[in-house]
Image 1 (cartoon, rainbow, N blue to C red):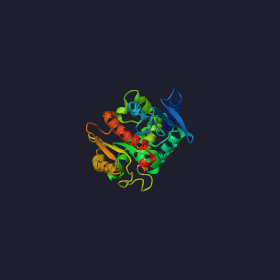
Image 2 (image 1 turned 45 degrees about the horizontal axis):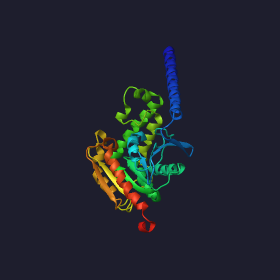
Image 3 (image 1 turned 90 degrees about the horizontal axis):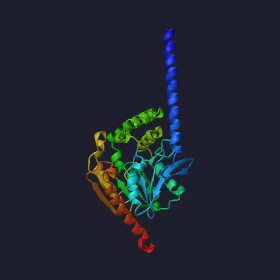
Image 4 (image 1 turned 30 degrees about the vertical axis):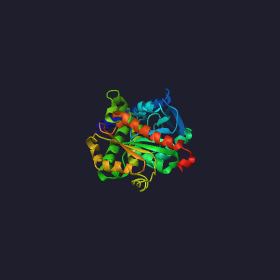
Length: 324
């Protein structure tokens, strides 16, 4: 019996040593990822952390792109290059994604909007801005528009979820399950196992946010933030609250697959409520696209951005007495 116990203890000690070595190795790899090479944009210092910002083009109003939950900004770079032909446009990685440092968890959607405001100030980017958002990012830019109307020149909502749609019990249950899965992958990523898996298969095809633990943690916290914040933050905004702000609402035509199908219930009605936020709103329907419209039919997104940009550019170019 003592011999068996000794063998088990030795095996356990060996396993712990192996796990520790894997965690140390992966930690060093993450540090190398963030420090080695030159990021495509620049890392902006913000409250003891750095956020990665990539800007191109010239002109006003500035376009800012806010990605969805678990979505790296690089998915938007091809479209960013096209927008840069007529105005200045920036993408950025939220905390924990890409080249951006992680942030403490338990943050709200309003916290993320405030961080975007701080990033614009730290990077010396003057507003007002046109905010382009995909999916979860729509919550952030609408919170931004409510808190900083003077910095908001227009919104382009690319298949963004509306608050009441997200409050449905079956939708919240689905996201809670995905958070558990993301936390599981976060643990595997700390051991370097997700990085190894990425050498065998294309993880982006399966919707993975990356290979590093901080990216899975960031995605999980994005989803958790849907249920955080005040009741007002989690409630649909009243009709007309954005006045005549130019707003484009782009909706998918191909239904959500698998477990995401629960989002179809009330999605159309939610998009109608988004259109009702402004008296100057226009709808686009991406008939051949699933949720990733900016990848499936980027020309529709580009058309909507240009429409909002033209509306905003004309408004801000008008004399002050004409805008009053």
